[in-house]
Image (cartoon, rainbow, N blue to C red; front, side, top):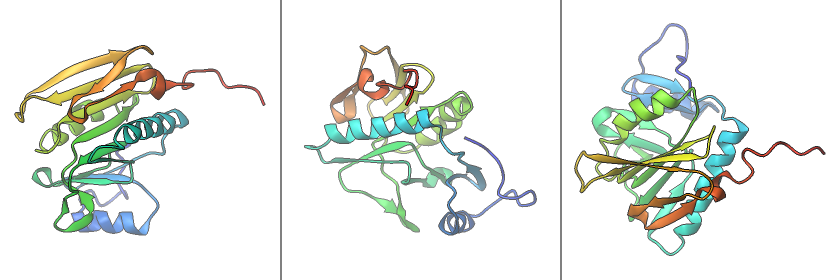
Length: 199
């Protein structure tokens, strides 16, 4: 996740300017109270893991009133004047959108980020602080792309107390309690660390 400015002069943007930039370009970016953080193109591993997590969760939600979304979906955090675009998000029940942006959701139940070495501090620090302010959010999941490991932060009894659980290794089963589903890590990471085959 990069933090380059849109140009070398302007360093603060309104939400309207941010949305206008997204609408008129192919870039993906997040908005942090005036600052735009451009999202570098994901590596093949990042893209593969994100896709696997999305499909795995969506498959488990077939008989539930929840839906999984990919990284195209914007999350609006009104308290922090910020837009985030998690790798995967889940909304349970009716989808609620921002008053000024009908394409941005305000009530995610679960968000997932695939972390790399360069985005580690951003995902565990800045993003987690922003996500914690969302009342509807029950669990924040961080999936590592350099090892078979998933960390899940779960909100305790609708308070601002978050419990951390770590799941490691191919035999681990990721428990997403608020969705009442479990995902085998072997399914998420299948083939990710295998050497490429020759044509």
